[in-house]
Length: 411
Image 1 (cartoon, rainbow, N blue to C red):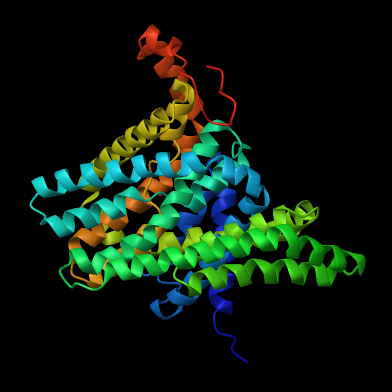
Image 2 (image 1 turned 120 degrees about the vertical axis):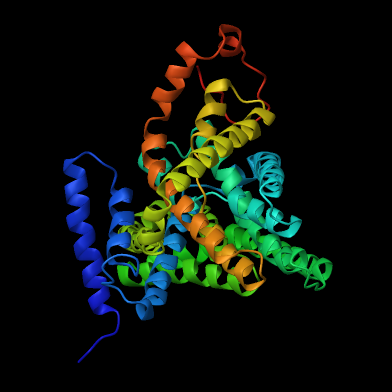
């Protein structure tokens, strides 16, 4: 009896284990091993996973992102989220807005029309929620000031990607009632917030308490997983992202006394399915195109990393954080993210992204993701180098008043 996708799962997990083992011996990060596995098994590599199975792998990857954001939500609380709302909207607006503006001027200078230039700004403004949060979690930096800013900006990006999808046909000249769509989206988002608040305050804590009284581990596990996927599915159905819904599901359960037990249950599932996410990203790479244009791709990737790091640092500076937090924030969300891949499909459909531009975009995105573990892992050393060699002493000693609820970092 043939079970669809079983062979691909064995190939992906088996090869991932081998590649990660080799890279661990070389003291290289596991994420790099998963991306490399994707390149090897994908259509641009040895084609061990065919095009007909790519979509199924992407579905497994989507589950990984859901579980990752669910756990991040579990580690938060509604009170904590409310306390960073200022960071979400100010920091996120600065990061996304400035990135779009700068990309627009650069792309226009290279001959792209105004619609294509704005759409490229949309793509380059998005960072990788999955990679950044996973690394912050592993280094226990999620609750640090720069971790909080990074998370807040990533939440804003997850929200703003929906209006970007709505505006894409408009800038392509295909019209559509965008204002009505945005108003409907805001209404749906308000409804979701009300449901989350009511569920977190009254429904879910009591439900989990009753379930815990049965002392049935199976029932508890099923209930946690159902809540996670049900909220993610519901937000997806009203036009918001699955990842944002999963984060909200985590927030709902975080208000109960069983959040730690829920985290322990989900973590093993998360590790498996997030592996598929990183592999699926690697599978997108066209190796032949990458090798033919490698110097151009590396050059543009460096420019993107530097520009996005500076813009993210500007967002942290706008929030009046110390110089250390500003720089560590910039060294966290400089890459291009997974939601940009989803948005790029809309760009191709509406004629805003030519095939060659799309291939450059994919290569630059994957390369920026691949170097993220190295740069984030070395961010403290990079800051210390700049502190000693580059920054003027008066800048290092400058410690602005931070109106955030989080404590300032010492420099």
